[in-house]
Structures are given as structure tokens and as C-alpha cells.
Length: 533
Image (cartoon, rainbow, N blue to C red):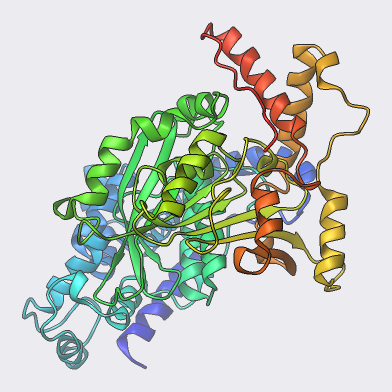
């Protein structure tokens, strides 16, 4: 048995020892949620009274995880100086939290380990002298993380995360994702974020699954700058910069390592953040309820975004001509579509995002069709059956673009019904049935403002907790795919909101809610007039 396997066994034993809290097994949130606060309070008091002491000190974990890394983790955990330096073992709850914090590997951790490998020490961390020599030979001529191949970074990651199973990181109590959206500032949000990243690292995934993990799970959990993530086409990337301003929250995620061929760095856009714990939540809601929707954020972040995307000295792009990939969910999808007009975003992936105003879409189409854009964009829209957010806005980016100069795609995702795979025509008919279309008798002009507000808010809350946030790719699913190269006429009807799949009255209702919102905060009226495409 090599030293890594011995270390994994040791951490497994510590993890088992720290498994103290029985989990609430019901998957029904109505049953489970009322007991979760009491459940947490009981075990917190129990741990403090009984003083469940573990078996390992900070000095031990400093040897396993690295000195600088342990200092950062101790700061994140608000450890006292006494707790960091004393010879007594950590309490079991603190050990459990330490494991979760250690699950998030930063690029600095990789660099620290690389420097230790080249330091000339006889032994490295928990390895023998012979294993240290072999490891040093594996990294000959490599002194920086950006010089490492994907395989070399995998080796470094396995040393930094010496856990045989993901359950050992969480002391056999995995996050349950019980429907509520936990932001990255909460303890449960950190657990869910760490679990998602580690699941992506350990399990094979398609590029589309990677996109959905980023957009629907990680973006809202406020990933810290420097954290290393798996990349969709293999290899790794890191959060280079987080930018929160004017209602926009976006991550600049840079490909790391030397294997960068055909890999684009990513701008990931977070959706609306309705919770006060989320960074920039007030501005996010205001930009969501603005007319035009998502207008303020891209303007507020333009200067900093432009610098990051055009100045190699800022460390995000390697040259001024380098194009990037954008991924945005919900309101983030709107911000992405607007940013595409101002920045070199060669691949645009909108996940359940509303549309934008017609003027912006027409300007972008003109740049594409005349060659002024300077490259061939790839535009992808992912919608969910049962959602209404893609019916909001005026049109989606790509409307009016000539398929000779742009590759466009719309995919409507649907959970597979009772395991039966439908034909594309049957799937299309099913999606028509489950789309949130208002009844024919509904006349928006006959209703008061309060009724408009109540109707939209009630329906929005329902879909936000269901189809809008659902990661359909995690289970059996089907996709209705419309490609510009195969059926551009139908694709343009969908992007232009000229199909039975879209009810334009949802956008009229949203505009009325926005009008009411502006009256409440005493902003001047800036209503847009809806004109059929």
C-alpha cells in the first residue's frame, strides 16, 4: 500500500469518527424542513457540552493539506490563534468543517505544492523519500501551474484531496439539495458548492452537463476567486475574477495549465439574486424589474470587463484577439446577450434566460451579417418545458442573423415521461401542452395593476422553484433541438417570439409589474412598446 492510500485510509477513519449527526431521511421538504433547525440546534449544543474532541491537531492537518492552505482555511473558519497553535485535537464539528473547506482547491494551493516538490526536501508531506523522488521526476522542468499538463494537474489535485470517496469529505452526511437556494455565504451553501465541484472532478460529464452545473448550481453559490474547477472539455480552469456591479454578477473563469488548445476561457453570469444574503441582491432585483430588462448591469461593468478581455497584462486573456465563451442563466442570460454586442464573446450559451429588446438584437444581427463582428459566433439557447422565463423579453439574440455567418441552436429540455423516449414530433407536441400559455379569455388590459402583479409573481415563484431551476440533465431527459443549418425558419420564429411556444402577454404582464415597481420607488416611467416581430 502506497503513502497516498495510507493517507486516504487515515482520513476515512477520521471522517467516520466525526460522523455524529444523523440526517433527516425524508425527501419531503414539508416534513423535513420544520425539524432541520431543531435538529441543528440539538447537535450544536451536544457538541459544545460533550466537547466531542477528535484525534488530530492543526499541526497534523497542516502536514496533510499544506501550511499556507491551512492558514487560509483557518481564516475562513474564524479559528482563534489558540485553536491554530495548541496541541489539543480539534473538536469533531471543526474537523468536519475543515474537510469541507479543504475540498475547494485554489490555484495557490497547486502552486504551493509544486514549490514543495522542487524544494529539495527529502520527503514531501505524507510521502516516503522514494515516492518524493519519483514525484519530483514527474515534474521536471515544470515550475508554474500554467506549465503543467492536465495529467500533472490531476496528480497535484489527488495529493491535495487525499480522500478515497466523496462521502469521507462530508463525514458521511452529503448535502441533500432540498429545494431551497443556499447562497455561498451560508454553511449549507458552502457544502453544496464543494460537493458539486468535487462531483464534477470525480465523475465523467458531457460539456452540456458541465454548462448546466455552472449555470444552475455553482453561479448562485458565489465561488471565491482562485478556486479551481474542472473544465468542460477536460482539464481545469480557475475563477480569475469576480465582478459584481449594477445588478450583474459574473465570474471570469480562465483555463489553467498548458493544454489550452481549442479551450476558451469563460464568463459565467449569475441570475437574479432575490435573497438579501447574496452579494448585490438589491441591484440584481432592480435590474430584473427594469425596462429594458438587464440594461444597467452590462453598462456598469463595461470598463472592467473590457480591460480584462483586451489587456493580457490583466491575466485573463493571452492576447487581445482571444475570444471567450459566455454562459448565463436567467437574468444572467440577458446580461450575456447584451455583453455579446460589446465584447468578443465567440460562443454564447443562454440557459433559461429571457430575451432582450429588438434594437439590441437588430444591432447584433447587423454586425454578424455584414462581417463587422470579425468572427463566426456560436449562439445556443437552452429552455425548459414548463418554464415562462424564456417567454419574457422581446426577442432572443440570434434573431435576424444569417445562418451563413452564425451557428445558432435552440434546445428545449424535457424530463423523460415514464422512461419512454418520444419522437421529435411527439416531444414537440408534449412541450406545447406543458408550456405556460395564458388562457384565451385572459385580457391584460381589463385587469388592475395589483392583479397583474399578483398573477406574475405567483406564477414566477412557482416556476422558479420548479422548471426554471431544475437541472433536467441529471435525470432521464429528452431535448427538442432546432438548428439554424437545418431549419432556420422555425429557429427564427422561436428567437423572434413568433411561435405558439411563446405567449407575448407574459412580457406585457412583466412590463406592468415593472411599471408598478418604478412607481413604488418613484422612478421615471420608461415603458417599452411591444411590437410583434
